[in-house]
Image 1 (cartoon, helix red, strand yellow):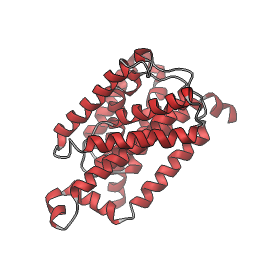
Image 2 (cartoon, one colour):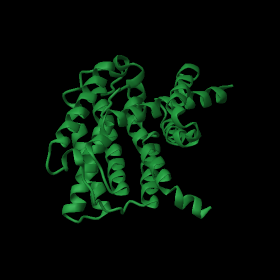
Image 3 (cartoon, rainbow, N blue to C red):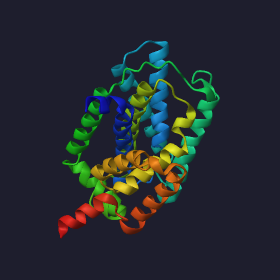
Image 4 (spheres, rainbow, N blue to C red):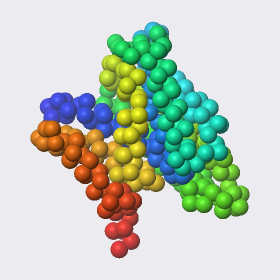
Length: 276
């Protein structure tokens, strides 16, 4: 058993990192925000921590704090110009933000350009990664018991009605995007410090697509569903590895089946059975 975990340690680490990324998007989706900049926030924190670790020699914990602070500030700054956007317009604007940052990182000397940064200390072990996931999970669980969680749900269901009962919907949208940036930043730091090497391509649209699909599979308004969806999406390529060249087709078929037959995701299926 120990040898199994040792030989698959990178996969287990990626499971937790992907779960954090799914949670970062789930926070925004629960407020009705289709804000797709989590990969960008992840990249900001990853580069901040990698630069601090390689050039200033900072250990992991200060890197997590400073990296998450950087991604949170970026999310706050982004929240201001997009506060009036909804739906697909918000999605396009935030995707554009991510692509702009990716292009900038490709052309900066401090980020290593397209070749990326290497020799990042590998001090984010499995215990640190899962410890961060547990802390974030407990924090979100505590948040779900507050009035702010009710304000988030009201904002998602009917923003006009929410404003009518005194909910600061603009504040809800602002702080959920900021919180999503924080969680994505933590995931970015852990990713950088567990993979030794990062490039701008690691934080492009392909990464954002994976995060969104994980939330769709698990359930876009369920934090637990987002985690389950990220686990399924991470393990799926390994499970069907024997299909070789047909893996991508099988991936697509499975995802299509989930969208068609379980539009509310895995969490929706569970809630349906519980009601029965």
